Length: 108
Image (cartoon, rainbow, N blue to C red; front, side):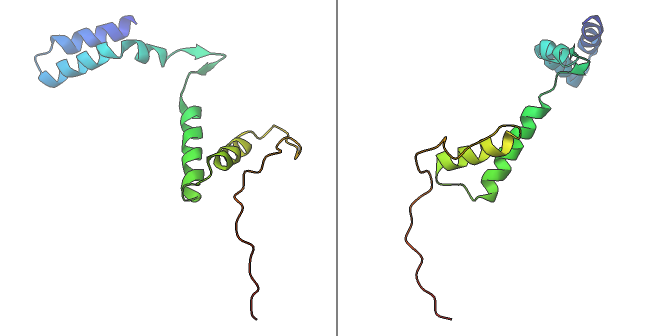
């Protein structure tokens, strides 16, 4: 905290407009900057895992060309993200797949 305050003070006392703007930005985001250096269980706090999950969901939806059935898309995402969960077929009794027309016969 002391070092960050010293850096902000140095930026504020310069007569360069851009440096003063940096000082204002650092002052505004001071708590967030200090929180980025917090260690819990020998690891720094990071939002990287959350960003990775969001990116994964975006990739699933883009590969599916925007699923029209929200419940099916939600189940697909939850199933693919929860590796260590177990599932049974008896859990879901309602049908979430759209009922379409039966396929016709084909001439060979």
